[in-house]
View 1 (tube, rainbow, N blue to C red):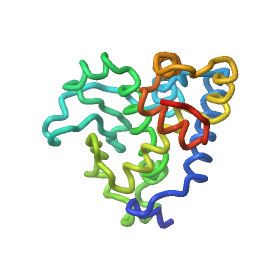
View 2 (view 1 turned 90 degrees about the vertical axis):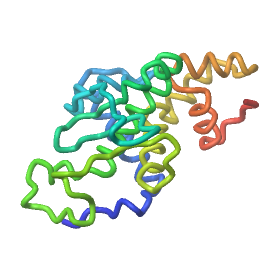
View 3 (view 1 turned 90 degrees about the horizontal axis):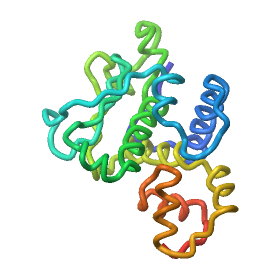
View 4 (view 1 turned 180 degrees about the vertical axis):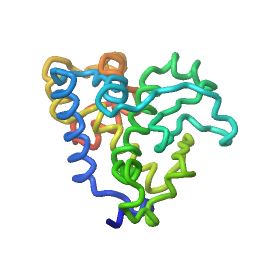
Length: 201
C-alpha cells in the first residue's frame, strides 16, 4: 500500500468527506446528536481513542501550538500557550481539531498497528516522526490540517442551520456567534467566506 505524499495537498472534497465520516462515527459511537459546538475533546478521547495532553513543547522551537505523536496515539498542546487558550477558547479547540486533521489525513493508522504490512516510506517514519505544528506554518500538510479543522468544527449544514436562527447584524453579534459555536472570530470569518455566506465582518 502506497500512502499519499504529504507534500501534495488533499482536494477539498476529500477533506470534507473525511470530516463528515468522523462526525457520523462520533454521533453513532457516542450517541451525539449533531449540534454546535462540536465536542472536539470527546471526539479525540472517546471516538478516536487518542490521549489529549498538555506539556512544554519549547524543545521543538518557537511558536509551537501543538503536536501529534502517532505511535503514542497522543495529541499534546503546548502548556506555554495556556493563557492564550484561556483568552481564546476557539484557538485551543482549533489546535485540537488541527491535530485530529493530521491523524485523519496523514497518519496511516493501520500502519501503526501493523507496520510490517505497509510501505510507509512515502509518508513518514512512524518510529521517529511527530507532527509539530507551529503558528503560521504554511506547508501543504499544515494547510490540509487547517482545512480539516475548519470543516470539523464548522460543518456546513450545522453552521447554516444555526444561522437560520441568528442574524450577524453587527461585529459584536458576529463575535458572539463565534463564541457560541466554539471557534475564533478569524476562523469563523474564513469559514463563512469558504461557504459563500454573506457577512460584513
